[in-house]
Length: 308
Image (cartoon, rainbow, N blue to C red):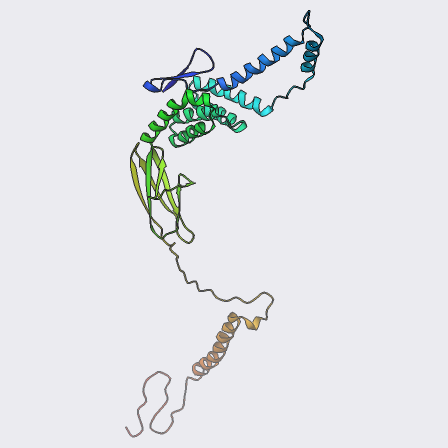
């Protein structure tokens, strides 16, 4: 879908769209106002010239008109007009991203029907159909009787065409209830059937609820079709780990409060008892034979009992 300049700056004609090939840009809104201001100024300047044969009351009326204060130019009005003209030039050259930026700037400076209409045309060319339909409806709200007469038929055709091309997303959150649904990162506006109108193409759908992991699904919606999405929220999995740590004495505490200290003490006591016993056994190789029913030997052999 391409655009070319018409016979004047007051219109842009749409090629390749059959019955929609008529004026879609309303530059004449600002141009007519500018022409009216210039005509008014020219009439005042003409009246300022002295006219031969004019009566004194007529001269006084002209002087009074000259003395009347002139309304200052609203800077936002000038900004809106300049941005609108830049948008028209960009739209003529099919620079849709630039045209969208300029028309939006004009609309922000002055909420005019002409800017809304051209925003709709530009958004439609970019494939942003849902936003384009919103702008066309805004035009219908803001348009003057003359603009309604000139453009209502075309706008109605645009809106009908968008209605056939947009897709729908039917979102079902299986569990639990009360989740917030986001489509492409923005809060979804679901109707009574849990459906949302979207542009054709790929969309990211999310269900968000405190205490649950976010459920996410990416789905492609075909032009004029409805796609179903089911999202199930789940509780986050908590991994439990048991870690055993040895207590450590606080810095600056008494050494006797440390378990390591008492462990060392136990080792020392055991060594102190074992060493003398070992020395006593090994230092007495000859142990006298005792009378009785047993004997003591140092070679781990049994002694014969008495009487054998």
